[in-house]
Image (cartoon, rainbow, N blue to C red; front, side, top):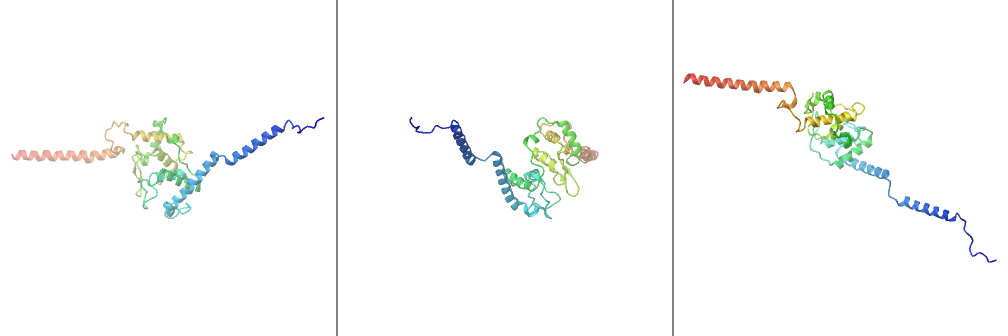
Length: 269
């Protein structure tokens, strides 16, 4: 009998070779494949925090402390969340130009990308209210009438019935809400800036905030009807009565003087 030139292979040998090849391919893919979405998001967030810390060190640390712990010139930022930063910096209130009873709204000096980086850094100091999404602040489909009821119950005492603002004590004031970005209105309700109380979702749910935003946008829009004519700041009977006394009574006095003067001239002639 002739000797076999080669040993006969086991039937499962091909399967083992295939599995080894697949394992090797998988190992190579794992080594060279791009990072997962979660890893990419974590990396982007870390970069945003690092850049935000640099911006913070230049523009915020002198008042709020190097670690956001606060100083005699500025409150602590630990736990205020990204929403507070987006509101304060996004409306130009921060960085503040000078101390005073209230920090006014002014021109924004940071880009939105920089504001997002600052917000990411401050949010990393402690959990707090987050920047709302577009869906959260979208007034489409909101109940405007209910929003009006909520606004008059919770906001009108300071901001006026139509959101035109008003004076407070000790040099403070409630700013006008006309033309304010819905996102900033939502963030103000979430965080309670300066003299304003906060309305977290546990106190005022997201839908109610959207109703209020819809009401504010409606009463301050150019399409809003005002059957009363000149609204005089929307302050109600106080401003209307004052207008009547100053201008109405003043006009009557002026007419009386004119009539008396012309009557005297007529008698002389």
